[in-house]
Structures are given as C-alpha cells and as structure tokens.
Length: 125
Image (tube, rainbow, N blue to C red; front, side):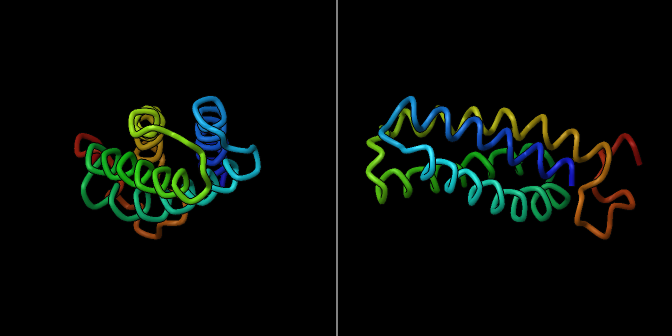
C-alpha cells in the first residue's frame, strides 16, 4: 500500500504542478486526471506489463499512456497544453516510473499474487 501511495503522490505532484504551470488547468481537474492516470498506470503498467516485459517496456508504456491521457484531458478540459508540454510532463513521469519500477521489482509488486521471482531482476533469481 505504501508503494501505491508513493506513486499516487509523486504522479499527482508532477501532473498537477506541470499542468497548472504550463496550461490553464485548475487544481481539482489536474488532481482528478493525476489520480485517474496513476490508477490506470499502476494496473496496466506496474501489475501487467512490468512483470511480463520488464522495466524499459513498462516505462515506455507508462510514458505513452501518460501522453495520451494528458493529450485527451487537455483537449477535453481546455488546458491549452502544447504537444511539447505534454511530452515534457510524460517524460518526467517516465523518469519517475523507471525508478519506481526498480523499487517494485526489488521488493515485489503489491497486489500481485505471483511475486515468487517473476517480478525480480534476472540477476536476482
């Protein structure tokens, strides 16, 4: 539970801070999107892609998912974010996710029942 909380707080800080700085996002709308993005990224990226395909694939997937969700939110909510600004936010989230994945792989992924070596670095098996 601690890892999920760390992910949500860090993602929210990045998304809320940068969308409010770059665009016309309100705190509440940015926070809502950050929580939605964090939850989707945890289920898809951290619990499914990370154990199956590894850190690089999960990081790229998380960054791409972030870009798509932020692009959609910007369009729907009128945040006026440029494609480059969305890329910067997704890139920062990707950097965080890379190191977050290392932490998950070292200790096991919360919520996964098969943490018996499938979610470890190959050198640790």
